[in-house]
Structures are given as C-alpha cells and as structure tokens.
Length: 105
Image (cartoon, rainbow, N blue to C red; front, side, top):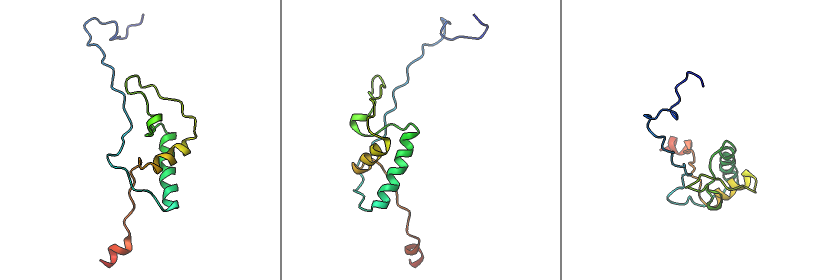
C-alpha cells in the first residue's frame, strides 16, 4: 500500500454517487426536410464528424440504454447514420444569412 489518500478505503468518506447517463439531445420539433442536396451533404458530413468523435446517435434504435449506459453495436457506417438522422429531422442546423439581402435593406 502506498501513502496516497484513497477515498474508497476511508470509512468517513462520502459514498460516490454514480453519474446519470448522458443521453443525446433530441430537438423538440423536427427540422424541415432539406431539399438542397448540397446543404444535405454539408449537414450530414458535419454530423458524421461529430459521431466519429464520440457523439451519441440520435436514432431511437442506436441510443444507449438510459439505465446501464450500454451502447448497441452500430452495424452501419457512421456516415449512413448521420444521413438517416438528417433525413429524420433530428439534426438542428442554421443557414447563414444572405449578405445581399442585408445590404439592400
């Protein structure tokens, strides 16, 4: 045993309460369907990047179990998952404002 303080061995230490499992944020209202294919690709690519970095999927069958935190295996590529999320309106995005309309106003 070393000289470092170990709270698990200290009978007077407060018990460690497990943190609740963080669930993915689902928008209250579904986003409108994206009809511009270029915008669709941009939004889906950004979402796929988030998924590759560890973001939780927002699709119902791919969400982790809220009690255990266990994540189901993702059979599809993350790019396909991202496209499905965008198609279902689960990804919130903003369009940049048009500068020409601001200048003419």
